[in-house]
Length: 359
Ligand SMILES: Cc1cc2nc3c(=O)[nH]c(=O)nc-3n(C[C@H](O)[C@H](O)[C@H](O)COP(=O)(O)O)c2cc1C
Image (tube, rainbow, N blue to C red):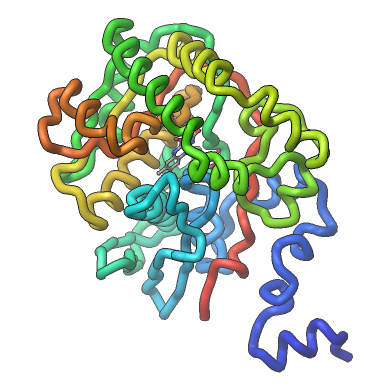
């Protein structure tokens, strides 16, 4: 016998999960159990659900998870979910399309592990991935998908070995995308100045702050209710009831405090990488996403941590000057990341495949 919820769902042609939302999907589990199950080892079946699950483990701006997947036979399309765009930090949807590129890269790597060669093409706003049977190909990058995370913490200051740097640089190789890898302290200090200037500008921008705070999940219950957003402990902050955390934010989340934290994070990093595509359009932003995801996976596979420090490319007034300082001329710098050796922080949540797959 159907209960009322199942009855409504069935009448509307929806799954029960789709109508109840993420909180019901996660209700039975604790935060840690939910993270663990979303990051469980890849299974061969059900293939499409598994590939989508691994795709969604990709880095994505503010963890908004701005994607919709649809499957027709051996073709999987990834489309933008514009309801999840962030107009303040990302007015032209640059980060949104980079995030789709990150998801596509995960999906392609996971597919090859299961014995599918994946061919990706950009069609308007969508990434269309065609799967063809191929020998199984396990790679260190694919194995790193469920472990990778962005680590917003100070690192231990250890430099990276030349072989490590070579592998990180190789991971970023993507047609029409340049990677500038910096390890000299003077070059990193130059990037730090832009990060701090960008952070100050963003923290004085009310719309930016409103949007950022709307994506912060201050504790496990809040995060489980939406299965998205920026989980405070994943950024090294304590888990607090919302009524305590929100007033404290004004006291502790200050321009000076954040700038000090970013300086420490950059001073303790082994290096910084900037990605810049030859052109600035959706297909190039997607290409940047693929390179940036491979960078994160390669760093993870090598036992390193990484995080994004995108302030210099997010603040439009700084972007061109930042690019020029790196010799990019008119080219737009797309993504800035730092890397090094650092701690494990709690993982962030993802909405289950049922909520991001469209039939
Ligand atoms: C295009 C893009 C831009 C991002 N910008 C930032 C950033 O400026 N600062 C930051 O701390 N994280 C940034 N991130 C990282 C996301 O916040 C992170 O991937 C997301 O919260 C999910 O967490 P996870 O990668 O640890 O799974 C960015 C990610 C992407 C793909």
